Image (tube, rainbow, N blue to C red; front, side, top):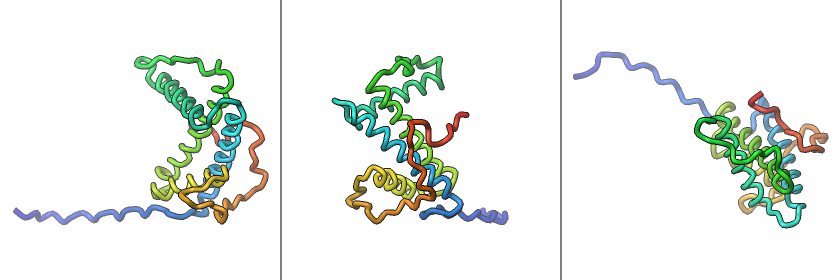
Length: 168
């Protein structure tokens, strides 16, 4: 009835981070750089008459998702469009959507690889993006939120990827 086995010791749960760690500063700077690149790309989309950042960029995200499915499962999905042939404003929206995807990947890395709390990571990366876009976040104008940039030369002057591709 009763087990005579000695219970194995339980491994303590690893405590998740809820504040930036010094060893992750490089990753934090990559998030800031990516957020700046996205803000610039979003402005490119908005500078085109008749576009909306939300609508056009969401459409571009859906096109990238369809392309990704076709690349991963070519026997099940066929690409509907050749995105290399995209013209304005879709071309600019695709740039913004790709950068937004990289920002999302960096956020996921905080949670899955760097052991940050999910809710903290989502809130913190949202604050970074909001601050760069000069938007409020959850009712806070973020005027006192310091990005603590290590290097003021991080301005993005081109639309190239701010972070190396994970697929290289």
